[in-house]
Length: 234
Length: 207
Image (cartoon, each protein chain N blue to C red):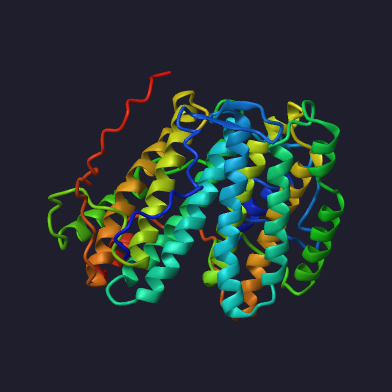
């Protein structure tokens, strides 16, 4: 059941040394540091090498940051326990999917071979996005309606979920231009868009389950500035 | 709180209000300049390592002193980036040189950590307890710091040793994250091809 995933990860190790969250060390224990990236280039899944400041690596790196942020949020949800166990399982599944998102981004849709494209296709039937929507709907039912802006707050788990949400937005911003140029599947951009909605809802849900009040936006009153001698405008 | 007005803080200089900041050589540039982009990312990295340090110390996994040394190195890396190599005085260049030796030291640490770790058989997900996760987060920010530093080094504004250090640092943080999980006896989650559809909805109902 695992062999397909395993085979493709092995190939990743051969093709991509440093693009993702993870590495695979095979028999003989090669060193983690390959030094091949010291000159500022890294390899895509297709074997092509590009400078690390290429937009593809920006997108991959941000996706990686997102998975790390979700790992953190998941940990705090584990700590919180009561009422958010469902979220813990979902977040783990999302982390796996982000790995697949990474494979899609690392395989330029406009230049990879057909088998590679097929192997790294993401959410062709829209099922993963639908899952997110189902999860959102189910949590939303329990939540009080939003009547004002809320601030990232509501306990550690909720706050960490908001951080993940904002990183998800940044990932989406990096991916959208690539999707426009058809270098990444559009489904990836759609998934990331829905993911930030999901994380927002999770943030509210976790706060509610923790019995914590979410901090609501209030217009801060600026103190009245004493008029002193006018400063000449530059 | 005392009723009288507190002394004006030295913290805010207001000199940056127009969107510029100055480099170590005195030159002023727009805050959107790639040098500040790189400096900012290195700073974020330093903050992320600060959190990781907090949790590592709490778990007494022995990584805390290495992390502090790394934080100091990142300070030096900041100085290197803030001093354009092709437009600074010799004293400034000397004061802000970044020694290759730090990279070798990192490699030594990685080798030691790695020799204590079981070989990786699959992709792992950022997981494995607070220390481990914060180290993973630092790792992913480290990658961004590296990406933003590349154009600066290419323009000859920072030393190549800085880039090498950042590249090796993400490897170190990866090994350290795995080590922190193992130290606490916590399991790392592995990548599994996600299931979609019916199974997922069952999970939702349990929520």
